[in-house]
Length: 365
Ligand SMILES: [Zn+2]
Image 1 (cartoon, helix red, strand yellow):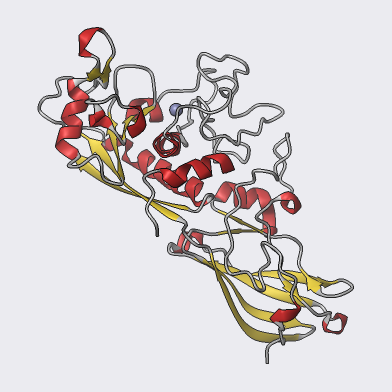
Image 2 (tube, protein in one colour):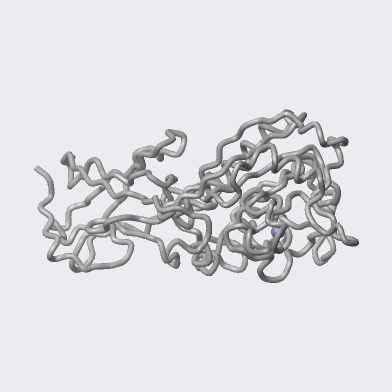
């Protein structure tokens, strides 16, 4: 026997599990305080488990889990108490999150999930009796972003880090319903490139304004058609200039010089080895650079909002990524992303950015 549920009696709320056709991953745009403390009750993507009956006031427990394309993201079955109020049994607000940092911060009311995963209720306990029950609500992909990350030449030592940053990017984009699907491959250094440690990207002086021959050599070798709905990222050892990464949105390339369109160049050296400007986080990694550079291509825009404090050229606070009190950096597209992966890092995409994506390289699922 399962509890009789009459869906006609349900109130229709956004985020309601009983009756909800799908659930979304939270990006905490409104639920983090200025001090970086999460209040799940304020999150627009929270959900409740509700039964539209008091069931005689008996204690009710629903067992929730998530099942995902990658088992590492499954959240173990968790008992959620449904407390009786005047008209129904209802849980506290719950949140779906895409990464371990958010899951730890939110405690037992957060459930880790991937896009294409499901939230499932497998049993309901009423009083002393447990009843089998089956409800499955999908977490759907809205759009897919396809691409290739190419490890160029002698960059194998950065591979493990690039894999980790790629995973973090996938978790970021899950928060806006975008499946970030990048394949990592390797490629020999094109013979035209002379200095593997100092690859040129762009010539900005004189009449030669345009792609540097090094950048052209990389693109010629790897990109058959740069009008395709795909992004190509090149991880090189290092390039001229101090950046960790540089993106070339199609809209920004002058006529006749569209060669680099939809390409991203990443400096393995700068992403993995260079300490932050304050020199106080020697083991940090550029966790969000891949996600940030892809954001330039998708928004077809440069940086949005004021730079992060402490970023090179903007001294503000030296200890960026670990401010006290912490600053909530919701904006992944600021100039300079936080390097530490914390709850309040600059690792989230805003609703505005989500909407800018709609006319980008994304393909329908
Ligand atoms: Zn940028």
